[in-house]
Image (tube, rainbow, N blue to C red):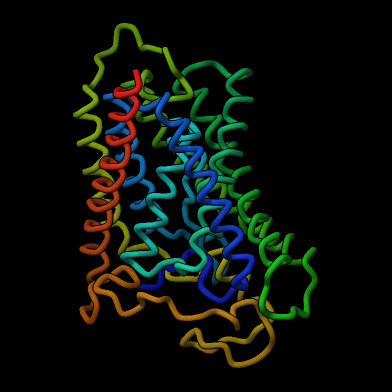
Length: 338
């Protein structure tokens, strides 16, 4: 099962990748500092759940065009549920786990991926949600509609982040212009955004109906007259849902290249095995992942067929554990400063 979904090594040259790594580190440090204001005893486990859920849903590639699939990026969803600062950290945790354990997204490209998906996508998603919530009712329906629209916009803008990165440090001289690349990326990712928006809206509405006070975009709201699930039960239910998605539904995910991968192949001819046989395209400079021989590389146990679900469940557990550990540390440092 091929679910590779992020920028690979070699696509963007070393100097630009290094510069973006520096940008990512600086902005993540800012997110860590600002997230101390938001993280509470209840929000820290919720943030860990958000990271685990995004990991699970990112495994569910869905078809958007013939031979092209899409998957959730998660920035708008994370920002809506836990805020922009913690949300950016949630998506970053997912990307780091994917790169280090599942060989998805080059290590040298980690700064590029974090900038596009965790930082740019989350920031744009949050700004759109904030703007729309001034017009929409502060209800489960209202926040669901807001995150749907925010998902579409944030996915498209994140895709343009890659176009800029390639313009600055692309390794292959292209036979097509950057305007065409931008249009293709934008068009494909607008379709992906519709799928992401649907998933994000369903997830946010589900939480908002039982615990609106745990939805960052509905801070202070309560549903009078309705029984409210405890935060612990909500986290457990969310983790079980993520495990089912990653461990079972992932077997039905599309194996077609996602929007980014399909765009990097534009201009080349590819055989049935997915190997480039001619032409000129971005993917020609793609290098092998440093950890491609790892135990869980490519979302399966190395050498064992049909283990995508096992790898997915492991990924959900590891992402939740890593995210929760980070958020608990930040929360305790906040308490220490009070």
